[in-house]
Figure 1 (tube, rainbow, N blue to C red):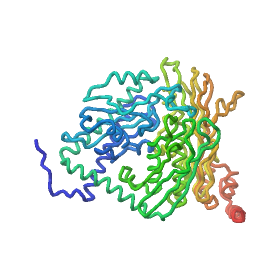
Figure 2: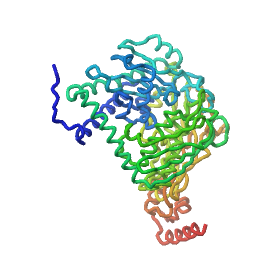
Figure 3: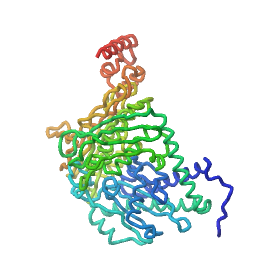
Figure 4: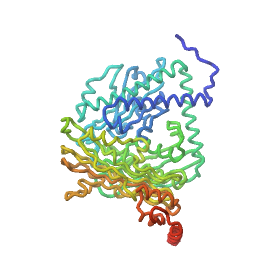
Length: 592
């Protein structure tokens, strides 16, 4: 039956744009729910390590579920890469594309991207996209992540854009090749099906929403309007910044192999309604796997810039249009193949985004937080003696502290900035069911958040013990040498620390480029995660807030006095002593 279109509808009005935008967002949200509900592995179902997107016919991202920001902002790259390899007439109803190649606008290899074309009245108008972290894609290390890899060929199977399904039929030969190259093929297949299911749900909802209400021309005009509106909003926010050049730099402890720190350097130029983010001066590409892929560089930069501009800007390609990125080839932000890139979404992305936000701290410190902790963690794997099946687990419980904000304290026990507000932590009981481990400690560490008017968030003591298994353990991360920075007079956060068998005779302190270890049953892994940087002068912090921190065991009485000039007697603030001490400390600071 023909659909009668209303000719009086004004496609340019804000109501039409709002309705379309919210509908597209709801589709992306439902895709995410489908992923969580249908996946097999905890890394999807509990840790939320994925993102879902809807793009237009050109691969322009128009909606996303930003489970993981560094993944979510990369949603449009999958369709764009598909269209480089397949002409329009080669993309057909029932096709499902798969890819993960880091040098084809992917992140690291464990993140597999599924792309499904969506036809409305036989015209390709949308793509639905799921990009998610699979717990193993091959290579010598269980979990496929190792800071000491020196080539992408060691990091797992590489898949260019290919049709996993063609006209609805599975390419069984291709799937068998993929399964043959990973440690846990059934879990990988199950999680791929969760991605495909999410994309198909998105496809179904888009067709239901669009086919009966809009003509194809109307759909195109409204989608273009959604992107144009986002661009206008972004340009309006840029105009609020003072024109000029602003510099920021932040580094990593090492490159995965060598022990010297390496730096991301960025100059941000604000010119009226445009921003240029120039990474010229960034150190050469790492020998180990601490390099950003171009997808990571683009998405991390976009996330950081939009964060600095406004928390309510649409996270779509329209908002990205005013942002120009310069990423010199052969550097940490644009390595030449076959450089290893396995760490790209973690320490490199965190340091790169930290440099960008630090630069914005020069332009508009009232808009950005202080530095966040950088991840320091471990993956572990072996044969579970209870099931005689392979297991691969991660120390998701080792999250740390976020930076203080211009208006509030930083979050404690939060994901690093590249994964902020996305990663969730599986509960202890679930981990102990899924893996042969016991959690011995999981508690906040006092005095780890950087002091400030608004302090950084605190880190945690996360300690697990292996039970009945001698697992392979891959330790990786950063922030054991370079702390989260304070901003606008705030103090730095603490450093990460990692240990094998902490407190025992055979204790071993682990470096952030430790790489592979073989542990034994009864051994423990401890991560003392770092705190975030403080924002503003610690002597301006409300003494009552300092007292609350002491009462909540986030701060000791000694550091309350040393850092904040707050004298606590018993369970209360000694006001006269505090005023006197703060005056002396401020005078000493002024003289210095």
